[in-house]
Image: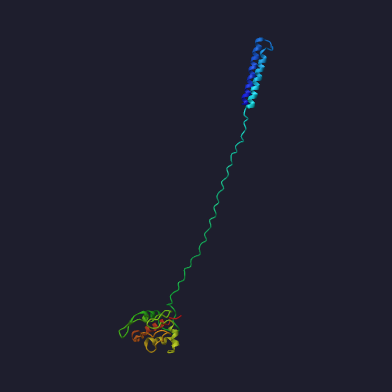
Length: 222
């Protein structure tokens, strides 16, 4: 609006100048005509109009320049460091104890204990026609399980307590060849043996097999 008022003022002066120039050229002399007062009033009106337009023109409040927001750099998300797994210690395989079947024979024993175990577990037919295996009547475990006859675990130790032989080997040998010569006592509170050991083993077993069985029985100890 202010720019428009300035243009109106300039236009009014231009019009006045043109009118005066035309009048001078027509009359040849400059005189104060009657219309000069009207021209001045017109100019004054135009100036007042321009001033009024300038006053009423809205003052444009300059807006502050919009600041372009500076992009904030994205903060990279820091992942926690991956923990390196600690390798587990190698698993040690448990040691499996071998069954107590390979104990060394007691001092003074002869024969092959391994073969004696086979003979001990094998059924043999005796002269009376009955078939028996040593293992059928005698246990060989540390719990001294009672079968038909006494258990043979630690018999190499108990034999000397009986006082019937000078060595455990002699006691075992005599118990096989002459089973009725000495009957092992029963434990306290236990019933008597239901059967006596049959005879005839000296006729069934060879001397080597007999020595092998003795060697095996001598391994049955703590």
